[in-house]
Length: 83
Image 1 (cartoon, rainbow, N blue to C red):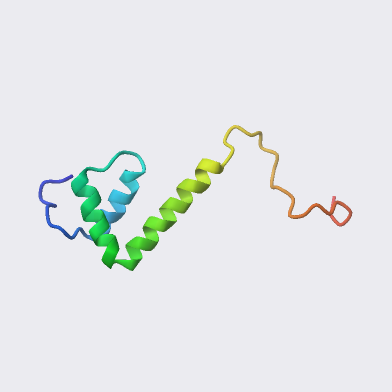
Image 2: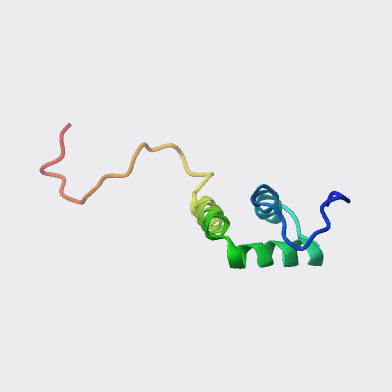
């Protein structure tokens, strides 16, 4: 954390950085506390945090080692599918 950013309420920009960095490393107690305080009062950053969590979950479920078979069919009805 940068030395001049020691106030209790970080900016939205800093919270976005902390949310992103928190996915790659463990945040310090101070970083986590400041981020949580900001998330309690900022709906936009709370939504951003939720979106990042959703993306992370989706990427963890994505089968990276599967061969590229193209898009999955939308239904199981083979008779109505175009060639």
